Image (cartoon, rainbow, N blue to C red):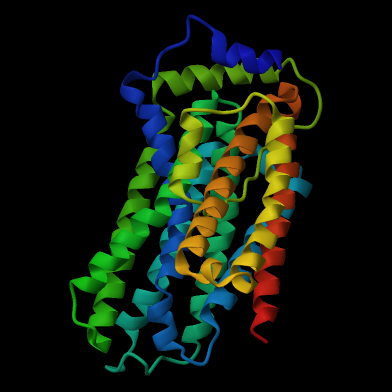
Length: 354
């Protein structure tokens, strides 16, 4: 805990002028989850191309499993820690760009004029792009949140607020691109291409932001101090791998204003979310007045709000509640269970439709 206090309480530390470092962490957090949101939000486009496939379920399983595979490799192969943060971020965002451009490139290189006349292997290449997106997610998410875990808590909050906002941003972008073109096969194709290209431009900007943050004086000072402190610690060097849950921006952003000091209370609050299950059952099978839209909307909002807030709180508190040398390992353990839970949920969702 002393190492953490040194990072946050040194009166001689540089200030984050104009909150540039905070804004960059926010944008990188948004960019980290933006590719997945882009793929799953364009499900209407993929469902039109492949009407016999269960697009949402296949995408979810492919994405989550590949992301957890990266997590397992990072946990078991110590050589990964020898790579620099900048290299991991650049590689991950480059993989994101490649995954988003697969669908448009297939259309551009196809000799068929009709949208639904796909070339052989197009569906397999699309699923492969989702797998690449999942691999990049584990790489970028682990590097970004692992780095933020050793910085003052406002940077972790910025990352999670960014991941929350990415869903809103990508939904607005999808609505604009669809509304600006006619609802015809050709219009659907052009709107999807425009949608993916704008998202790709944002990711290219994230590569610039990722390299820029290393040049900020405040970040250089933090990383230099952390490097000096790490030489005093013994044990294996771990780096955090973090999975993300898409929660409401309100919940994840609330940690900018209030974070409980007790991690035990946060855990009990997370456990109390089990009460949502009987509440949803009552809303479905209870009195007629509970079967209206309002109770379901309120419950869904509270479910997402509590999910986003408590996820952000626990990811902020956990690295700060253990000795510095174990902060990354604690994040790996937490994220390991989180990742397996996401995979389990995706697989169960797949079996639900069988």
